[in-house]
Length: 211
Image (cartoon, rainbow, N blue to C red; front, side, top):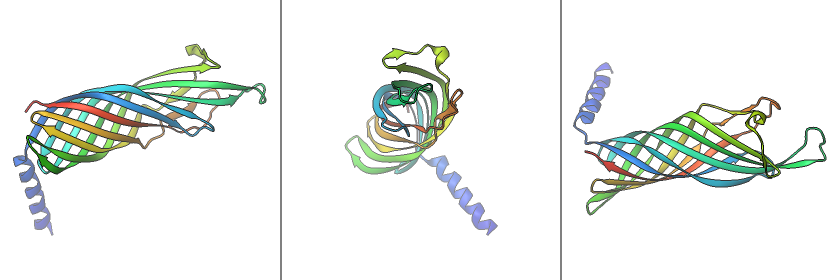
């Protein structure tokens, strides 16, 4: 059994050693829809951006780790009763932008060869390290000052990405969807209210394979 395991390890690292290796940079736009488990919520998609780099190891089957900085803005609107008078209700608009370093590790498969390139599928997990969360809250159209905003959000979350890509010569184009797996919300300091916020993002990016 030990000899078989050792042989598998040797074969694996040998194949990785001789596998095709590409390094590149990428940039793109995001379209994020922030979702929340709030009654009668209206969710609006917002555009953001991403900038980073990738490594691709392999040919038909490949492994593609990436790292990039991304901005994911989102907006939700809902109605909430007043704490002082339950019969009085306010219209609340929350605009939240998450800025983070995202690290996807994708497994890909070359679906089809085309002149000068190929079409591929990719999927895998994403670790997101949030560096900044900008929150703007308006009540009945009036923006609240920062000292009246007590919501807090987690600095780390998980997601899953899947999508399709096209390689043409030294260019690589990707269209992906990112499904949020973690709850971004970390409760309100004042109300201790449990909510679930998640990012659901479409990416369109263009990369340049340096080698």
